[in-house]
Image (cartoon, rainbow, N blue to C red):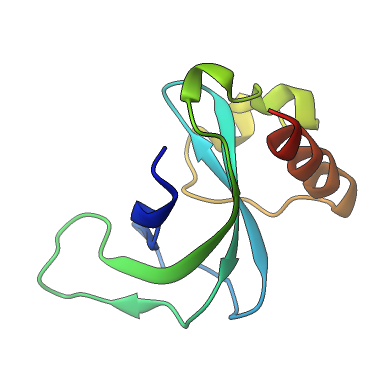
Amino acid sequence: MVRAEIRAHSSSKRPSVEPGENAVLYAAVWQAIFGVVEVTGEPEHDPVRRRWAWRFPIRPLAVVEDLHDAPPVEAAGVFPQSLWRHSHIRLSQEQFESARWLIEAA
């Protein structure tokens, strides 16, 4: 992954995130976690976009350089089935800390 290219996250529904919060990036096809980011702005709606019309800026804090090295989401205590119909979910503090450690160690 190119760290400088990670600048925003898009969602189909208005995300419930606030500036200053941290988040974990998830590669759905790989079922792997590959980054920890800070939310740096409010979600904005783009009425021109039919899909993924909500977007908010992010700043990468830790990123796995190659998705082949990205840890599976299950290693952080999150089951892929919980993500199938959601663009984002809330993690427990324990899940977040585990994910951050796994990403930084990868």
